[in-house]
Amino acid sequence: VRTRPLPAASTDCESLAKLPPEVDVRMVMLNVYDLTHSCLVGAFNQAALVLMHGGIFHVTVEVWQREYSFGFCEWGTGVASMKPRRDTTHTYRGSVELGQTKLSAKECHMVVARLAFGEQWQGK
Image (cartoon, rainbow, N blue to C red):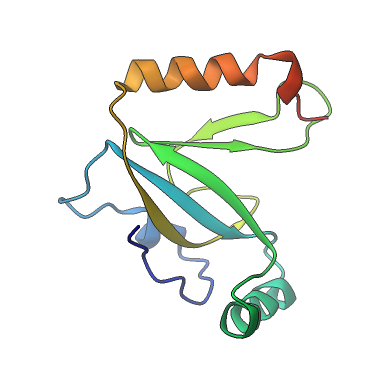
């Protein structure tokens, strides 16, 4: 598994979201965010990564130029989809390559939809 370094949190989401031309859209990425925009959480995570290899994070899965996340919501499934590395409720920190999918973009979307609308995976 290849990882991209998890640098100090940045608020410059536009520069972080630009994909280099060699990125394969079939690559499944685990995108890592600080749980909040709080400077204290960012500082804690920076220290915790060094000392404990951990921290307070939110993660998403990126494939076929879409990012999928799951979280609490008052209504609905809790599954959200957006452009990669642009989650406005968290601070992007870095990404980990998980490997390439053999599924088409449509098949990936169908898998996520099936999980999202299943009874077990509601965001409540």
